Picture 1 (cartoon, helix red, strand yellow):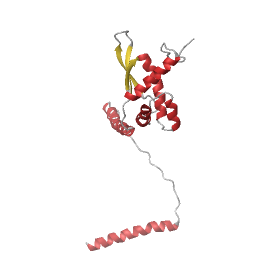
Picture 2 (tube, rainbow, N blue to C red):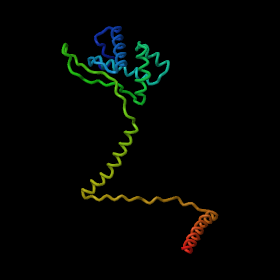
Picture 3 (cartoon, rainbow, N blue to C red):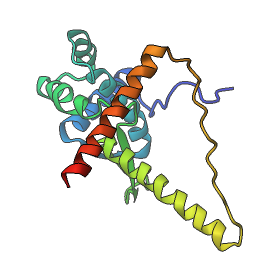
Picture 4 (cartoon, one colour):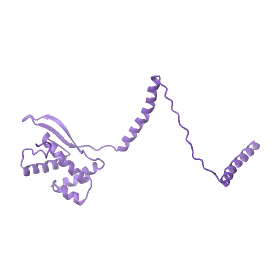
Length: 191
């Protein structure tokens, strides 16, 4: 049985299919958006995402590996200088497929395959999430009070470990107290 093995051959010989992948991936990187059929887009996306993952680390080795697929030097340079660094924090899923509808000639499902736009920094999201959590806690207490249930939060006293102090340390603690008492007496006499 042939369940979920391999890939979509797109009705082409291997050499034709390889050329199709190279051309469409090059166009996707160059224009960052292409319009194609759904079957081709799903296959091209696999190739494109692997290349972007390579492009996140700009090294001679990675450039040579990607150059096997992308022949145009300016497109290769754009991949490593613009597209790869844009997704440096993202672990995958660099593209998206937007459905357009049926093609009038043969009713093939047409889609737009494009790279995702730049995202905001994740730090701003964390702040908003923590604010939401903080805001939801008092709201939860209010809801329970409305229902007639009283919720009392009592803090357990924290026991500090008892440490025996030497007589010298006790004397040091008493000296500042005596100084403070003498200062307050002087202030009282000055008034």
